[in-house]
Image 1 (cartoon, one colour):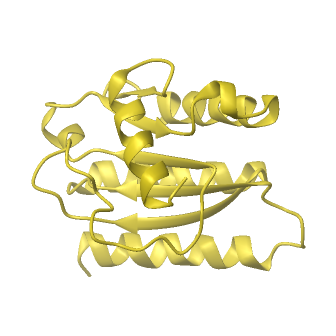
Image 2 (tube, helix red, strand yellow):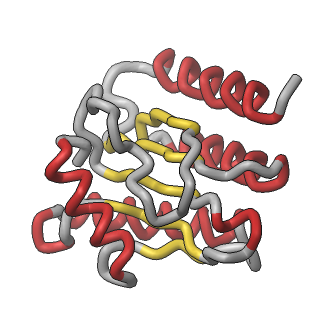
Length: 159
């Protein structure tokens, strides 16, 4: 079984578990965008997704995408199925070390409430722990790239 197929099966099973939780669980809608191609990175993304599900704060969706560069819109050409509170991008550059960041994309902080800010902090903490040494989680207040993607995703109806 290929790595991508295995990851899809694992993420979908995690999503089904989340759907089976009682109504009201998962206060924040979070989309995971996985651009990674190595088994090691994909397994870390899986561990990250499972850790988020255990918090019961998030309703997860996931997309596995192929991009030519970490800095290209990974959702280009797709129509959003819903609006998300957060989008977490695991760039393809993590695999070869050209990008050492995980991008947590949200609306600008002045537009979001304190609970979502706390959720962003939790997502950062989990990503940093799981990707220790390989990548650091950054949000719209930390770096320009998450802000760049936030602008694109707000205009596209994803956020």
